[in-house]
Length: 191
Figure 1: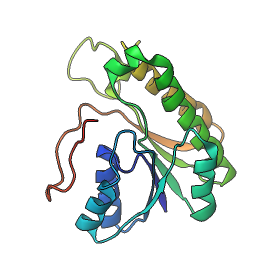
Figure 2: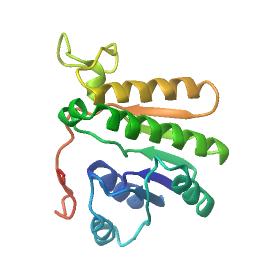
Figure 3: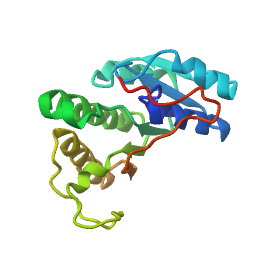
């Protein structure tokens, strides 16, 4: 089983479809703050498989613990986060609470259950104002213009430090993912 946090969200739902199509068993945990429950039916309609779904908030360790106690999780793909740059400027503490605390909780519970593999959804905002284009992975992290971007830098730093002890991780830095599934069943829901 692969735990997909935010698995009913835009990128998470597409990832669930791809995992199922490649023989994996995704387990979703989502608090529905940036998604809709009905997405689970879209995933099932496309793949013929209804993934295990836990409605929960990964800021609460009990919700994560429940998933790990009921499923043998071998890896985590962590998509769950608040994602609006402008909202993060109005509500910075909400972003630090949600985006940083959830990662710390995931790592803590994963370590207890000997799950050491994680893919972390970061952002191109960690590059700040790029001095040249195109930007690639060799560019240095800059001071981002938003609390959202800073939460992603902190997340990457946490994983870098944990990589030395327990968590093997990959960081994905997106540049405006767009599109819909070819079936039309999945697309962006900008809540």
